[in-house]
Length: 347
Image 1 (cartoon, helix red, strand yellow):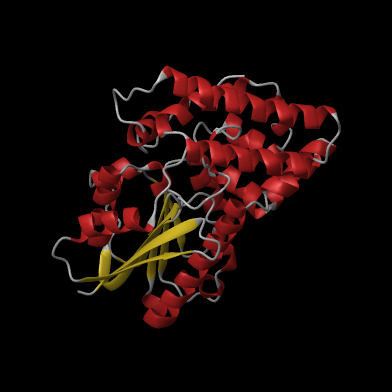
Image 2 (image 1 turned 45 degrees about the vertical axis):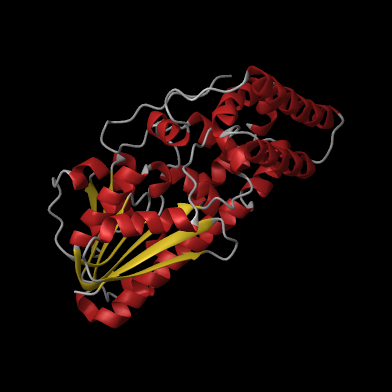
């Protein structure tokens, strides 16, 4: 097994190279003895997991232990060392066991060519579109999925979906029938399925922008006849001014900043603020540094992320607003696995 290469359309800026460059500075070196120590610890960890598998231990206990051990390894060693350990874990025989989980396998194989796609999120949501893949999984795969779909990160993503729905409905209530919403990197826009404002026709316009044609097509089909307009567009297109989308009361990017370095994040935030009406709100979300299944996600799921702290979020906000009169807030979700930056434009 090898780490999957990710090929994108060149538009989204989300590449493994950009993430690695943010996490590990070019020219970074490490001591060979430290790397060897880390590889030894990883080998012992994976060996114990393999032994448990051979002894028929419960899948829940196996994956729970390995997720905790990988998190400790990730925290113990420098990012440059951890990056060397990821392919070692992926090549180990134990990896085949975890790939029986349809959620883990989808993430690792990346059918759409990039990390964190809308199909992946549907495994977290338990959406009907993934029901057959779950049904076709082995008994071990089903048991592992019962763990991964309810891991702390997955719980936080479902909470994020519901928070976004609430923000949209609150905007509709406060702005009336003229409320306009923009979603960047919309995926399948599952939060719209729960929106009371959308169901009751209390939104003027909801623009859903995504660089994945499959996601754009899904939104167009699912919300045909509504105020939702699916647009094929990218971060690069927004930054380059190629999308004339108008002004909005609420703009949000919920699953995008996890893959963007600070420089791009600040530029995108500035552009989003430009698209806000007076008193409009921009929200961006990021997986937080408090996440405890990061090691499993980055290794066996091949899901590379840029985790951010409260300080990191404030750095993006402060680097974006300039002299604009704004009201900024940073807050965490309930289990602190996702952190939110919220900016209200005061004029």
